[in-house]
Amino acid sequence: MGLKPLISLTLATLLVCAATSALAQTEPAATKNHIPLAVGAGFSGFNTDLGEGDLYGGTLWIDYTLPRVPSLLRGIGLEAEARDLNYMRAPGVPANLRMDVASGGVIYALPRYVKFRPYGKYQMGYGNIDEGAVHSTARWHDSRTVSSIGGGVDYRIFRSVWLRADYEYQIWPDFWKTSPTSPHGPSYTPEGFTVGAMYHFDKPRSR
Image (cartoon, rainbow, N blue to C red; front, side, top):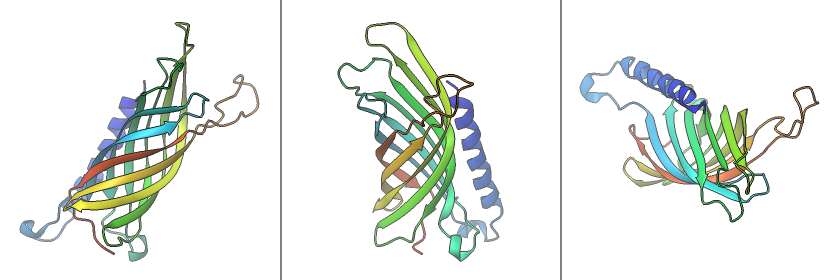
């Protein structure tokens, strides 16, 4: 569905950044920190904005915190995210209704307060929607470049393990255009929440 190449490219970019950061360390090997990566997984529920209720599924993400930035920008990083909403459809909803998005962008974590750390994010990526009539085998598919804004809070529960509660608002531009030559149409704007856990390979700093 076009997601695998984008996910692979985004993850490869993050891993290259992490490797470059690790090689640039000047401290002896015994005192080097782990690479500033966090990997997480969660469960998402989104309002489809199609008049067909909510749709649920899984989300994966990788955060890479930029290690060498001015103090004013400390906490800024990159995030890659992939979400597949394909479960728990409401009664009467087409059985093949599905939404999936792979995206990447900037995440900024505010200074940690006790065990809480709020953050905001902006991403761009690629999304797909599949839908079909309830009493028909006909299938409708559409794809868009998707932008999203959001934020949430991380909560440290044990050493390098954190919980995350995340909100995201997506914008699929010109989703309702009637034809390629028609004027710009209204955007499609699903929104939803994700709750999950992640593991930090590098201990986050309390700024």
